[in-house]
Length: 337
Image 1 (spheres, helix red, strand yellow):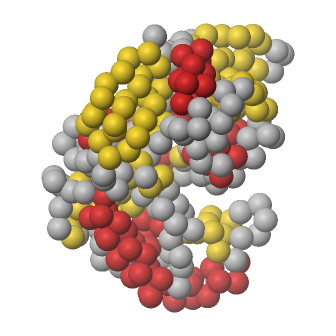
Image 2 (cartoon, helix red, strand yellow):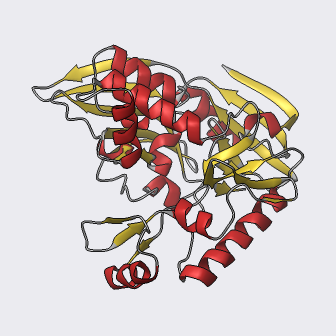
């Protein structure tokens, strides 16, 4: 089924609550409907594909045709001696899907609890948290070519997953994800080494957590650190954690011994963007109708009435300050439209 609305308000459809309009908003609930829209558009390319609108900064104005993907469905596809294979439609709520898998006894996604957005957006951004990236659990991604409507299946290698990156993000506007298959391990080892998780487990008196307990712990941490989306608009973590060469990291540590840093397989070091921003004095600070959230400097929030230009101005100020103090370049996570 395809539902159409003309001159649609997009503010309720992005978690930042930023204003913009669509000349035509189309909602699709099946892959066949999505293909029909692509073929109908022809040379008139779709301006924007929307999932949960949680990783998006709208700059305003009026877009052409916007496609809202609401493809539902989740089921067990099969199993092997070492894994359970599960498929979910691109329009499924990500957090609800994670909790559903855990309640079925299918493990491996618990560290990604409460990340906003949809299943279809997860591989685009290669979402990650607390030591896990979703690309580690993906078997394949089913997508449509936005130029031809042709269906294609990407195995994990073809997705070219990187840190908050994938082929779908590198080729914006080229692919529309319709469903994702996950390979969830039978043998489960909790990833609990991150400081926040370790401290929360200790506070709750849990030594060896179950997957559901670990999911609850991650949810508690995120709810404490992140704003309630019903009260403050945001796009979640706004900047990627920057990766620097080992010698650059060593030089920074000589000046800032308490700076968090995480060794990478290639010898580089990942820094904590939130810590860098915090040290520049931005946590809890506002610039007009936007600012850095008081509990987490990495999250930019809309205090009411903000437009895309307000968000861009704040992001630019933060980037300049971090560059001036630490010589480190920050890169935004959200997509700008």
